[in-house]
Length: 113
Length: 113
Image (tube, rainbow over all chains, first blue to last red; front, side):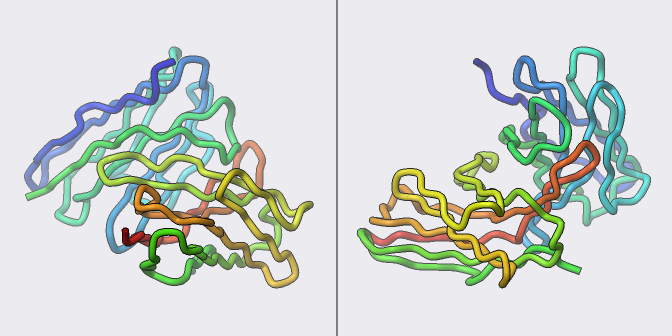
């Protein structure tokens, strides 16, 4: 069974640009969560989607958005990039919403110059 | 406000020794407490988890001890091996459709050969 797949794995952007990250969950998993990982703040929750609906949202500005498609694949978008957005963005899938048994991808490492 | 706090911040253990990582939480409504393990370049992976109706859970060399009254839980790694060197995150959540997993900031464990 294939794991969670995130693309791209690495990307470099400049301030003011926008970026879209993609996540394909494990087959049969209907919930997708996104986390931002930085050395100083650790793992911070961005949002969770289940059945194409956002179920929960973390304390991030509106520049961070996401969506989920009918096949459970998810994308997150960050607009007007800032230097502080440089981080590893992790996607995790689970069978259903509200479970702590998350299966993480290897992440998309974003560098903002 | 950090709802889940880990200690120590880093840990060095000799091969064959016992590694102990502690975690404290604030929200008494939390009812699921997992530990995640992350190797460099990889996403976190669920290691072991406990619910508050038991005080201890063991899986191989890994044991979670849970103290509900103190709002603390810990991870014990027996016979620590160099392959256990990784970052360990404790987490907590109140299970339910609109809940999210809150992570501690993580600790880096180094097991010396």
